[in-house]
Length: 100
Length: 100
Length: 100
Length: 100
Image (tube, rainbow over all chains, first blue to last red; front, side, top):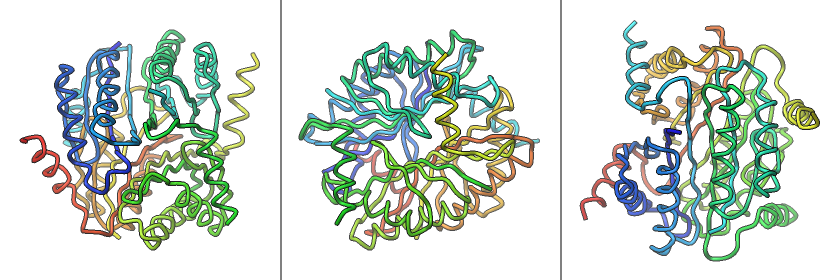
């Protein structure tokens, strides 16, 4: 089962600069073989459900190992079985509708 | 690693009545040994990360098997290593502050 | 337009204990005439869209006035025009399905 | 008060193709003077809190007027008072950390 996920990770107890931790998770996602797409409020990834979820867990573990005591994550998670889901197809479909 | 999760599952392509699918996921969570707490916009569960995440996957699979073609889920996910996280403790802590 | 909202407010830069701030928002919601329902990962409210959103803004303002430098909020927001939405009806509908 | 918002709108009861509705909201955001940034799981906007929230409401209203009976939206909402928040600065900060 393929999943598309939008992951927003908020480390708590480390002050106001969250970017070192977001960057660390980008590295974790790449180590997992994913191609993370950073945006202003999260990171999009797509892949096998188990691969995506293992990467998410690895990210929490990495951050805790970096000294983050508490993490609050928000994940938007999409699966579909009518056809192969794709982040590129989702974006292309919206852009095409906007031309009309 | 223990996780507290708030799971909001939205089945797409099955019309406007989502409650049969939310109910099916409650059953899946119980089968996983979790004690789901339903609220008006999701379900709270707590437990070992792997158990919670396996239940979430099983829920997506159950719904797809029930004929749901597409699912959009939002998950709020908390972990902490400074002390044992607990849903009861979170709620009690807020209620205590409200008395003051 | 009536809205049902599930609001999870995460104050940043104030350490690990978030409950004083969640409690402050409960007070704000009540001041707005809403009947907030606290759960382990957020607070559910329902009411006129404008009332709910004004309360959410007031909550951010209250927390910033309490000294919170940064806030990350997640809101699940539901509207429907086929019939009057209701938090009680949503929960009752799921529970009824679980009996079967 | 400036807000950065990540808005994921899910229309219910209109089948599986959501892109016409996402596209309609992009138009609404532009009409509001915002510069929406579409990604695979939502749309990022930044601006004055009231402008952003009025656009979000206008989007729900537009979709209901298009015949969507029910909408489930997830919004990630950030405010900060320590310095001016900026989507570009957030992304640049993460990318800089990744170079190290």
